[in-house]
Image 1: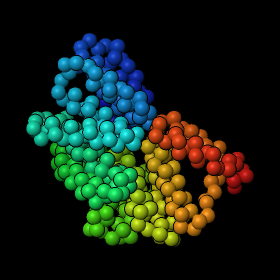
Image 2: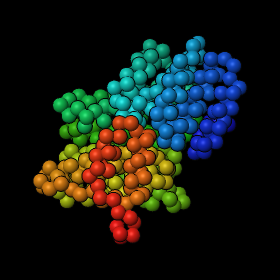
Image 3: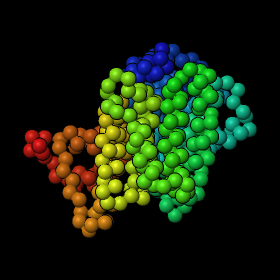
Image 4: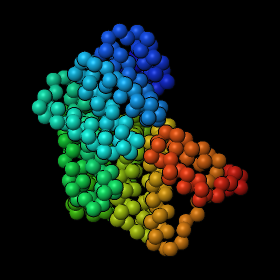
Length: 326
């Protein structure tokens, strides 16, 4: 029931079932499974520190089944990644990859965990292209290798178990591979940005729009496209592409109530302002309304790594009420 509620996007109800699992658990494996479901529930609600703590608590249970141990370690890697704790995220993902190199997966749950480990390892390397530009080519090579492996694992798995959400994760990998190819000189930056822009869906609230992991994947297309634009485009081309990526990622964030995308959108806007300031010599003014302030504060509460930037934005911004802003 907890898993079914989570797949339906009913994360509060999923957590309620996780609490019932905790109350019923009698063995270390049962307690670890309860923490596993709790971790997924908190992740769905955007409370990533709580998701991380639940995964850690599950891993502290002794003598749990190998399948579950691997899933919890994947949760750990994913939570660290979402919180921008890139070094522990990379370590946890690479430990899983190394395990499966010596112990080939024996069932669907292990295959899913193996694919997810490659996805996180590749995503961390993608982020490191920006965080560690001195070694950007090295990180781009790692990103491309790991995301191509994740895609190779996810696509047949999605077909075998008839779960299109796994194909959605593979679609996320596609955008990361495009970003890596730009850094490796295999793609033109303007062409790559244009491809990502053209691939974005229309209004996401309409019937027939992508849902679940497929919708989330297009949020990551915006993140990857913005990263390419900020590093390689200038002038009006940069401004136009960033406007589309920022608008679409916020639309997806609101549709999914996804705080990770709100955090990325705030960073994207800040980085664009810094690029423009450096290019023109004029500091870009922040103007926020009450809703913007609430979003920034909510993001600070969910992402400890965003706290300093959040205070900087609030300290520089002019806050107006909505009527005056219009």
